[in-house]
Image 1 (cartoon, helix red, strand yellow):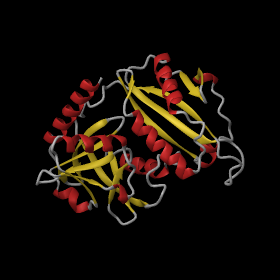
Image 2 (cartoon, helix red, strand yellow):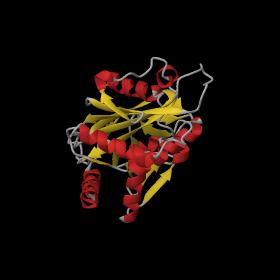
Image 3 (cartoon, helix red, strand yellow):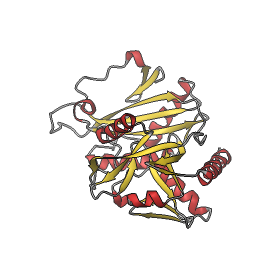
Length: 282
């Protein structure tokens, strides 16, 4: 994490930060966050991230009347400038103000903005394919909290930990019905033999990824058929390619799921196409 942070609109050194020990995000996971990619000093897909954030604040009952998107955007840009960050990960954390136990005393909230350096430009696709397995010990429920990037991310922590212990690069999570949901930090896409792209639908309890949203739009605009539907484990064995998407890492191709092996030609081409669109947009 870079040295300058922004706490409730105030810029200060990381060494000076004074988050209260009774912060509700720490005590109860009472908050949510967005991770936004910084590319060439610019914030990517800010509007989509902010829309998802406000939607999540509504579900959690957080008061967003003070939360001016223009002001927050300007603070993010200033933080990037002060930290001289060209490529990085910016995190906006929002938490309910301190007070109360499980029952809060207020719905007003505070926020913290931090930024972390990343060496690789976005859409630099991985040379070595990812190895995937399944995390089935805890399944993701389908409810109003499914689509929130909550400060309480234990399911994803345990899934990532399970992948590490199993010698994989990531774990695929299942929803409460045993269908494919997402990975610990990415959405899942499959290239099927008929050249259709398949991804789990929002109704399957997935996190509505910002990169997922923009990639689906991009593919459909370029005549690529995309189906958002239920995805079963059997579909993973039928697919010609699997790739993962996230707002931070872009597109990453998968080489294996269990004993099944995959190609990467489409994933690489798609990554290059998205990179060109990004260059043209900037």
